Length: 244
Image 1 (cartoon, rainbow, N blue to C red):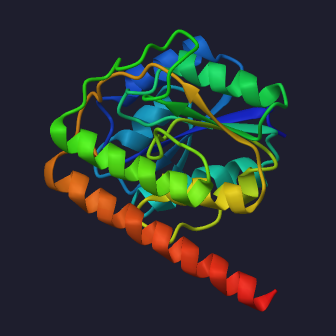
Image 2 (cartoon, one colour):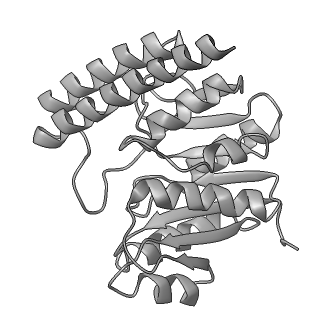
């Protein structure tokens, strides 16, 4: 039986350098949660470092990509019977103190899922606290328009990976992801299921390593991926409507 009612998981691929700081801060800020590192076929000491620092580890035999790691993390929380689940990334950009804020909102019963947003304002988070590059600004604007059309309301940070979820949302979030934009697909699924989702303003850090998904050519690639996800979602909804 789980020692906690909350599991926080971290998708990780070759993150042995970043994990000590991420796990240390997570244990300090959220000492009562269980922690799972989903090791996506790493070729370095990611799994060993995670175990040495007190985390449970689920290792894939080969690299399957972020969408598989996300689905596996939520599936583990669901299968193990956790009441709540959180997700942070392994690159250090998601402060556990902000995740604690999201978990508190979900625990209150106000919503089923809370998503940390770099671009929403309020609650001590001023507007324009992040200065985006021109490509990020363009990509973000296009994403916002697409998400508004799909969800029926604005959503400022559709690619955020900082989530807190209740047990009701776990089976939905644990289903395999079909698109290259799993966070966007998550929001579409949650809307279709009628669950309550709140975008919560948070502070995030610059990533410790790697490159933003909304920079240069990757910005264009991600926008194309998201547009494809939204189009497929629209086709699927029309198909379901025709069968009902």
